[in-house]
Amino acid sequence: MAGPHYNEVLYMLKTYGASGTEDKRTVQTFIDCETSERVSSLRGQLYAISQGKYDDRTFDGQIGVARRQKHGSYKEWARMCLQWMAGYRG
Image 1 (tube, rainbow, N blue to C red):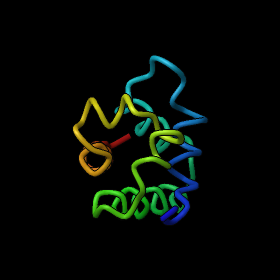
Image 2 (image 1 turned 135 degrees about the horizontal axis):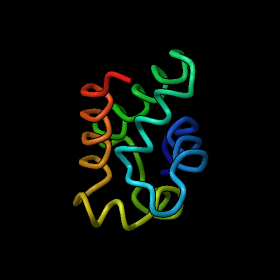
Image 3 (image 1 turned 90 degrees about the vertical axis):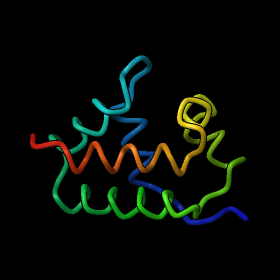
């Protein structure tokens, strides 16, 4: 099961998540730099991930095992990203 394609999530991590950048800061920079449509799309994709709509093996390669290990699961990682988005006021 490959699952849906999370193009905005991968774009955010590749474009703003340079090595060493905290994910919270990555999310905030995405919000600051991208259109409201892209931010909305990212939010929808993170919500789907938070609902378990992904494949661990695929995400290990695309998003990185370290995020899963740090947060316990990609679901929890996505929930944290959504909380950061909700709490951020640019």
